[in-house]
Amino acid sequence: LTYAGNLNNLASLKQDARHTFVRGDICDQAQVLALFQQHKPRAVVHFAAESHVDRSILGPGEFINTNINGTFSLLEAARAYWSG
Image 1 (cartoon, rainbow, N blue to C red):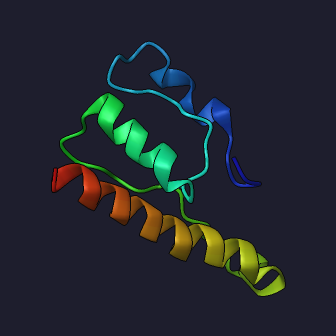
Image 2: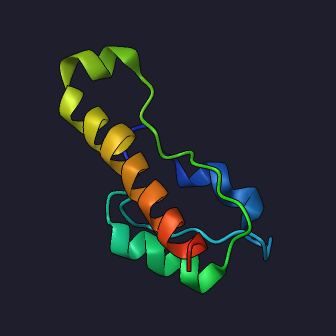
């Protein structure tokens, strides 16, 4: 989790069998693909983006890594999973 993440926001999902929290890195394509293979999703929603504009000006590298490289990693893992 980055500065914007808070595990307390997920507290209401602890007993929901449809939810699994994984502490990982969206840029780790092998881990993302392994999660696809383990959980066999029918759809994916990507909430891992960094969104604070003022922080992006002060430290753009973290935003580029998460928002661009992370999204690319997720898309490539999804393509590999769904194309068989």
